[in-house]
Amino acid sequence: MAKKKRTKPMSLENVARMTQAGFLGVGRRIDTLEKNTGEGFKGILELLDAMRTDVNYIKHSIKNLPLLERDVEDLKSRLVLVEKRVGLRR
Image (tube, rainbow, N blue to C red):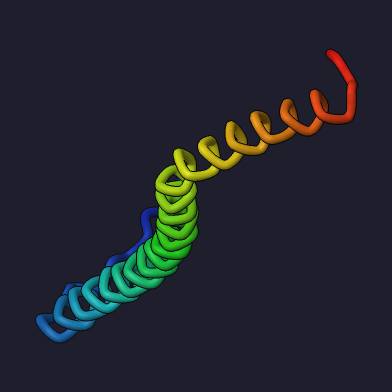
């Protein structure tokens, strides 16, 4: 037959120590989670900053697009005139 282990009676101090150790462990885990979450948000913020830069670049490029199209059409018409004067045909 297996021998039964004797258990010491729990004192109030032992219960208090165990409770304190449990709360400290939870506190450490929460601190670790906060640190990891903060680092994750930092990465997301960096990504959002890069995306914001790209969106601003695209926005400014779109603003200039009609001006560039007008310049291309102007250059095409001028090229047609030069080709006619030189005697080249398409």
